[in-house]
Image 1 (cartoon, rainbow, N blue to C red):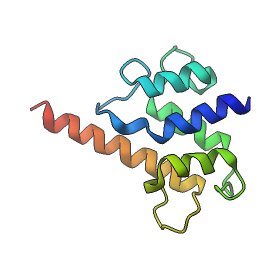
Image 2 (image 1 turned 180 degrees about the vertical axis):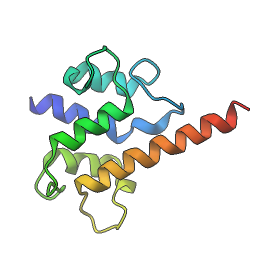
Image 3 (image 1 turned 135 degrees about the vertical axis):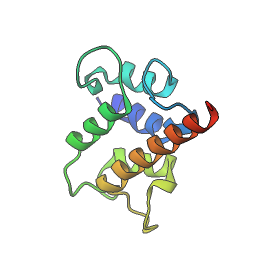
Image 4 (image 1 turned 90 degrees about the vertical axis):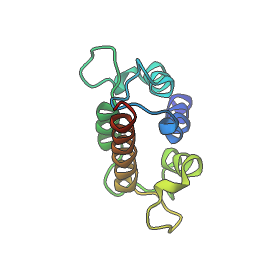
Length: 117
């Protein structure tokens, strides 16, 4: 189990290195790797992991007080994606992680819309 969550943390940390309006496990190899390692992240069971499903999984997986100080998975994510620590206090909270996932998804959606014109 630790290995699977570690894979999750490593892969999600660099998830947004590719562009795409609707990131899924079909068009994003890192989401596919997360899905392969943790199939239960696919909330609706359709065999395709979406960014929204991943955010929902994160929301349910970590309690509201979870931080990188006490949670090895959030700590690993922070090391892989330090920009996710918005207040630069060296501690990643669950809310900062969710905000980061949302911001990155919105950025790539806008980029895709701009480049497809």
